[in-house]
Image (cartoon, rainbow, N blue to C red; front, side):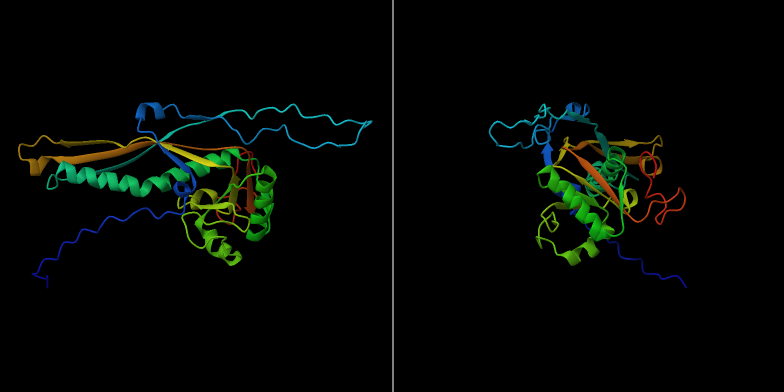
Length: 274
């Protein structure tokens, strides 16, 4: 028999984005200018020049050192992306209510969408990955690589690796960015899982530019009675550009595999093949 008492309506409260990802690790610039953001960002590196080295201090050295030319690192252009969220409903809700919903959906999913896009970019730009037997070796190799660069960098990894990495103790137990044994920041992106899989990538300093959100809302429909023909459509968008400085390295846990023979199908495919 049908319950004659109607259910109680409950609208779930809005929750914040989870954190611990790219947005927490990067230096964020809120530019406010949508048109300007569409051209991307050119980063002029200051920490990647090659003119460093040593030579003997012996007087009258018969074999004097040849110093490197001291070439400056080349600037790199990072392309933007547009993140959006849309929602549509019958006009029993106001345009303002629908727009608030779209704005919240964009803010909630924006970090994940940006991370997925950026992870694919990292895979395309990194040299072919170094294969290592386990997670501990992966972190060791990346920390050694970052140590050779002379700065504290970031290690990008899927969240599946956070729990096993905790056995090596974070150098900080709280904060938005957990750190490796040598103090490099872990970026456990919620959007990294399906893209990076068992690959971890080290980069230098991270930067993120984002425009002010730009929103649209309209009521559409042809029927004379609004409740029979109209809908309220809301769209919230933002231009986001992510970049990093200096060198990049990738490592993959496990043995090289043939196409179609991966432990995690679709996750161990890299530019140039395996």
